[in-house]
Length: 493
Image 1 (cartoon, rainbow, N blue to C red):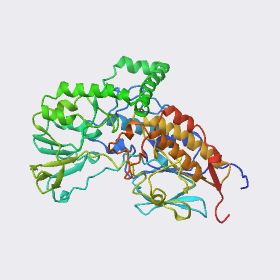
Image 2 (image 1 turned 90 degrees about the horizontal axis):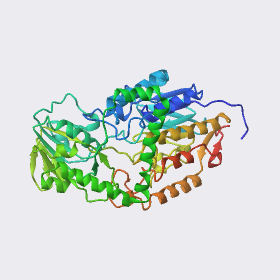
Image 3 (image 1 turned 180 degrees about the vertical axis):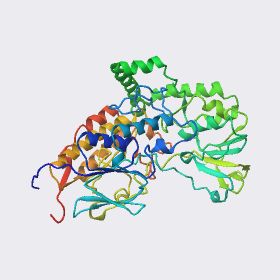
C-alpha cells in the first residue's frame, strides 16, 4: 500500500447515549469535522432518555457516572436520578456544540460496507442514506426492551407497557396492577407505585440479591468544595473508583468475599419483611453475583406491604381481564407492567449489518457475539463498536470503559488518517486469540456459577461481562497496534 498524505476520515456514529456523545466530543477535540451522529429518537440520552419510570436512577455514584473530562460539581445526590443524568448529557451536547452534527429521528435499518469505495453506507427508516469512511456504533446494551412471549397478551383489555416505555398518562391510583419481573428496573419503580395502587401482584421468576443503597443528598457546602477545589473533586472521584474497583476480585477470583454481601442482604430482608412466606421467596437460591446485584433502600419494605402479593408460580397465559398462573389461578388486573429487562446480548439488533463481500454480522456471530477488545469485528473494516461484547461491568462505571474505547478508536483513526481511502480490518487470528483469553478469564468467575442471567447468550456463553479490572482494560486499549489489523485498498484501486 502506498503511503499518502494525511487526511482525517469521515465518521458516522449511531446513537447519542453516553457512548456516542463522549466519542463525538473526543473526535471534535481531535479535529474531526466530517462527523454525523444518527439518533433514532427526537432527543439525546439513550437509555436515560427512554427510562422515565418512577424512581429511575443510577446504581453507580454520580461523580463516577460522568465523563472524567467534564466533571459536574453540583450533583444533587450521591447516586444520580434519571432527570439529572439526562440533563447532564444534554448540557454536554450544548457545551461541545454537537447539535449541528446530530440527525434526529433517523433509526438505522441497515449498514453495508462497500468494498469498492471502502466506505460504509447506512440506510434509515426514513429512506435516507448516509456514507462515511468510518462507522462507530454506540447503541448500548440496554436499549431494546425484552418482552416475554406470553400467550394471550394481545387480548388484554387494560393498559400494558414495559418499564422502559412508561405510560405516564396511565392512572395507577387504586388500580389492580400486575408487575411481571423483579429486576433492576422493578426494584426502583415498585416502591414508587406501591403507595398509589389498590393491589399489586408482583410476579417473580427468581429473587434478586438486594443490598442497601448508600445514597443521600449532597450538602451545599460539599457542592461548593467540589467546585472551588477541583483537586478534591478529582480525589473524591478517585476514591470511589478504587473502592468499586476492588470488588472485581470478588466477582472474578475470590467469590467467597461475596458471601459477606449475601449475609448483609439476608439481614436487610429479615429486618423489613415480616411475612415468612414472602421472606422465604425473596432470598435467592443461587450464588450472589451470578446475576446482577441490586441496591435499594425501600424494596423490601415495599414488598412487605399487605396489598402487595409476591407470586412465584409461572405464568401460563394472559386473558382479557388478567393473568392465569401455571396452577390455573386467575388473578384480575387493570394494568400490566413489564419489568423484564433488555435484550442485552443482541448487540446492534435489529440493524442489518454487512461487511466484506456481504458477510452479515448475524453470520459472523452464529456461535455467539465476539469482538477484538470488544471494539473491532473481523470481516467488518472501519467498524468500531462502543460497549461491545465482553465490556460490561458488574463492579464499576461503564463510562471508564467507554473512555478507554474512545482513546483506542482515536488511535485507530489516526492510523487510518495516514492512509486515506484505506480500511483496517482486524485479523481473524488476533480476534480469536483475544476472545479465547477473555473466555478463559470468565472461567471460575461468579458468573460461571450455573445460574441463568442476561449475561449469557442463547448458547450459554458470557458475551457481556469483562472478566477483570477496568485499569487492565484501559492498558490493553491504550493505543492501537496496527499489526493486529490488515489495511485494505479499495477493490477497484
